[in-house]
Length: 366
Image (cartoon, rainbow, N blue to C red; front, top):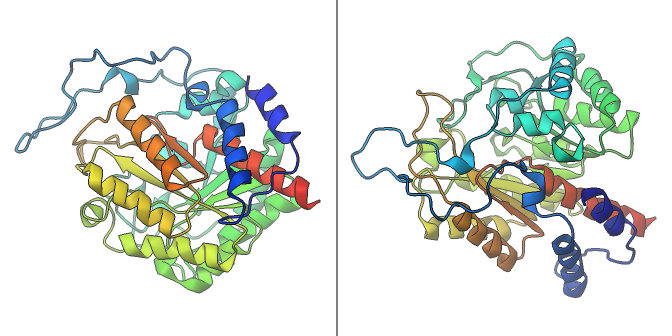
């Protein structure tokens, strides 16, 4: 189904998206997406699709400190298989890190083993595995003085990606406030190396905020990437408790709007975690703030406590509620909204749509 839908989409011509100018063509693009694979086609086949009868406790009441039991729709299988082992070995041999491992992503088995579509994917984490910030939701190691950058990392990353034969890759990184440019130059060099080895590959960069520095944002926005992503993470009220004090809600919005201002051709993207104690009104306002900042694509997923030292889950959001947020995203005018319990900022359903859109744009411009 995936290949047939992708082939059908990519062979369609004449649908060039121009934001705020050609609404009818945008509607046609969304119709193509509705006809193609949906979010369920990118999730594990053995996960039941209907959990309305679940009677377990989903929300902690005020004053309660015990952890909630994991609901069945969030349980995943232990990653195994030859593809998983092969990809892990290759990453280790090249001294590359992945956010899949460092952030303990629940989809690692599905993505690394190739899932039902047979293509292994991974989100490469640049600049090492140690961050200079300490967000209360993230399990990545922290230090004020991480190890120096690996000068061979851009080339190693490009060679590994080229060997995998992928058409879409996601690069992210730790925060490196210890570096004068926040690591933006290293990030940009990696993108250029990837494009040098394979100009057809589409590159998404999920970047830090670089403390809002416009020069750093400019370095990334004009390095040849296709998608500029930076995560808002949570609603404004909870930001001081969830994120590092150097990461501000309004600063994130400025980073996203600045990237779009510098390079209007970029697709911009952000992500929200749910289950931290936010209200429906706050989630809706966050989505509106992102849209007002020019963000094209948004993902919403369930926050999962990585270790006992991190923030507890306040609520497990139901699949039905995630569906409501997906519908709101469509109403607000996002090009694409991926919303589901196991959705993360880098999710293959979203990558399918974005790659289809970008390739269609290139075909029309050619």
